Length: 387
Picture 1 (cartoon, rainbow, N blue to C red):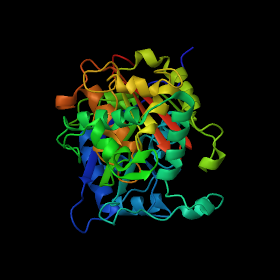
Picture 2 (tube, rainbow, N blue to C red):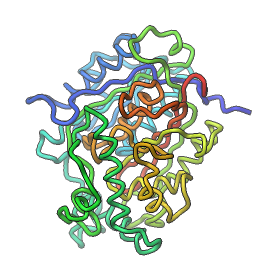
Picture 3 (cartoon, helix red, strand yellow):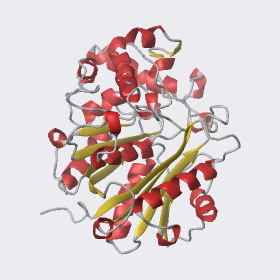
Picture 4 (spheres, helix red, strand yellow):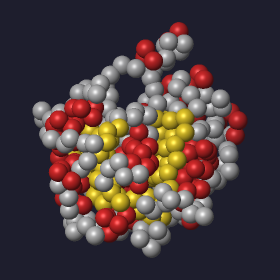
C-alpha cells in the first residue's frame, strides 16, 4: 500500500538571491525577499497565496515573525523548527503533512544569510558545548575533523580521498556560472593548503558566502495546474528526518550518522532505493560529509566512501553525480546550506541545469545535515513520470 504522503505535494517554484557576495548593505531579510519574489514568480503565485511559512535562522530569534512581517505574509501555519542545515529539508516534510491534512495550501520555505558580508561569522556557538571547551576546539571544523580522523583510522580512508571530494565539487562548480569558486582545483592543491584542524585543510572546508533560497510547495494537484515561468512541478516522493545527538562528544559512532534512519524513512515512503536515484545533492560542509552520507544512504558500503569518490563516480560523467551545482565546497555556503540541495535537485529534474545537466534525471535525492553530524534530513524528489 502506497504511503498517502508519497507525491502528495510538489515543489512549484524555486528562487535564489545574493549568492556569493550580496549587494552592499543587504540584510538577510532583503535577500529572503528577493529569493521569495523569484520563487513565487517561478510558480506563478503571489505572496497573498502563501498561507504557511517555514524558516530557520542564526540571525533572528523568532525568524518566522521577522520574515512574515517583512514579506507581509500572515500564515495560518507557521514552523521555525531549527535543525541547522537540515532544517529546510525537514520543513518540506512538515509542509507536506500540513497541506495533506488541510492546515495549509501553499507553503513558503525560505532562508537567507549575509555571513560573508558580516565578516564570516553568524554568531558564537561555543557555549552550546561546555563539555568540549576544555580542549579549545575550533568550531565546527575540529568536530568534523574528529569524524574524518576516525574514518581514516577505522577504514583506511586517506587524505587524498577526502581531497577528491573537494575536487569533484569544484569540477561541477566549474560548469556552473553562478558558482562562487570556479578556479581549477587539484588533489595536490587541497593537500598543500593551510591545515585548519588535522586532517582537514582549508580546502576541505566549505565556502563562507552570502545568499538566500526559497521554495514554494503546494499540493500535487494545484502544482500541475500552475502557470509559472518554471519548468514544471517536481514531486516530493518521500522524506525522513532523524537526530541522535547534539555534541560530537555524544555521537554514538563517529563513522555512522543518523542519515541511516532518515534515508531509510525517505526510501520507504518513496518506494525506491539507492539504485533508482539519478542525482544526489548532499550537504558538504566538509569533505568527510559526502563520504559518510554516500555510505549511510546506501550508495556504497561502510568504509567504501573514500575510494568511491576517488574513482570519479561522483564527478561530472560519473555513475553517481553528486552536488552538481558545486555544493557547499564550490557553489555557496551561507551558514546553512540545506535549502540549496533542494533547489539544485529541482533544477536538475526540470532539465534547467545547463552545462551541468545530468541527462535523463528523473529521481533526485537531497540530503541535509545540521550541527555536528547531528540532525539528518532526506528528501527524495521526482518528475511527473516518476510520481
